[in-house]
Image 1 (cartoon, one colour):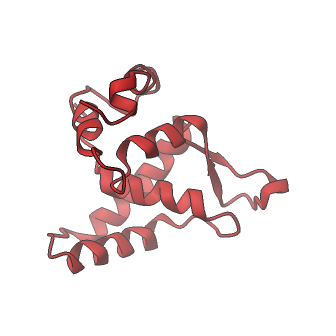
Image 2 (cartoon, rainbow, N blue to C red; image 1 turned 60 degrees about the horizontal axis):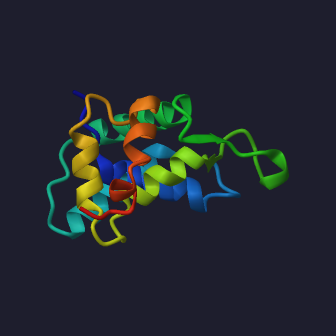
Length: 134
């Protein structure tokens, strides 16, 4: 069973969403994520491992169709991305600013590999999960 750091993935997806003119740099985003955790008094763990995980997530999100290279006409430079429709659904499910985000994360955690495309597409299609209701 794959376990994902949903907070880190959320951070990366928000950076993709807001980074039209910027290169995507997962290692500094991991550092910022660690600083935010520390500021909340939460354990950070090994920073190098967190940076490595952020890079692995970038590749996974790209390979599995959650993010895609930003088109040149939208400011793409080969080093920045856009959220795909699947990526937008993932972000809406795990976004901690949305009330009830814990339930979709729990449902995702119950899957053998929540980010496997067919698995995610099936789970995210369920209205009670996608909407965050129980």
